[in-house]
Structure formats: structure tokens, C-alpha cells
Length: 201
Image (tube, rainbow, N blue to C red; front, top):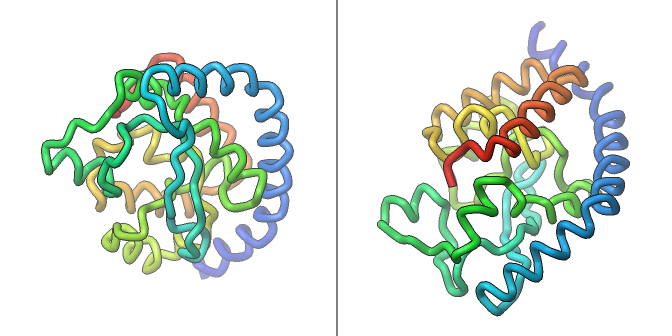
């Protein structure tokens, strides 16, 4: 019964959320475009090369899509998760990279993903297609029905410091409580964290 209620609520909320996300993403791209231009120029001066990083991620229903981020790592960095790079002892960041990740400025190009309907402002972070543990856990709990988000519950409670199991638990908690109020609260906390520059990078 509880699962059915969640599905019904999601069916009614999804179109409203998608429309709101796209309106806010379009507005954000316009308002933040001067900052995005400055960030792109700084990246190019710091480490000449592409300023936008593209990567295949798992979207809604685990359908692959191309995510956009400002590049924070050196060219030819292995295409693995941040956790895996830590285990391998790699330090692939450019000089600007840690600051961009700490302040989440690297995520701004994902507003384009939101505008295209591939992502939401709030939702589970899009996993790499190789993160099989996360993908299986999300699918078994029904989290894969959600559009991935620029920010989410896992982002404000630990980000890359969380284990895969804890990330899945946070995703399930969001699924159970998703709604306008939940999304607004998570967005407010995200803005606060950005200004405080908290979180692992």
C-alpha cells in the first residue's frame, strides 16, 4: 500500500517538477552566464584544453545520457569515479579543480541537462555506468524511476565521503519523502553549503 502511494504521488508530482526545473534552469543559465563565462576562461588559462567535461552517466530508468561539467581534472585522466581515484592514489586535479568542486561551480553546466529534461535540480546524483553496486541498489528500491539531480540528499550529507550503501540509503529516503517542500529544503541547504564551501572534493 505504501509503495502504491509513493507511485501515485510521484505520478502527480513528476510533470510539475519537470516544468519547474526547466523554467528555473533556463533562468539560471541566463542569470549565471557571466559567471560561467569567467569560469570557462579561468579553466582554459589554468590548463589549456576543453573547458567542458562530458561523461556518460545513468539517467532515469538507467538510460545513459551525457552529463556536462566544467573540467576540474587534467586531460587524459582515467574515466573512473572519485572514490576509485582515491583508492588508486591519483591526484588528477588542475590547480583550479579543487576550488571549483568545493564550491560546486563545476556543476553549473548541468543546468543544460536539466533544461533538456535529462536531470532535475534535486534528485539522486547520476551514477557512472560502471558503478554497478549503486545502480543495482537503486533499481531494487525503485530509485531508478527518478531523474538524477544536480543536488540531492546525499550531496548535502556527505557527498563523496559517503559509502555506496549510505548513498543508496539517502536516495531511498529522498524517494519516500520527495515533494515540493523536500526539494525546496534541499535547494536551500545546497546554497548554504556552496557559500560555506563544505564537502569533499
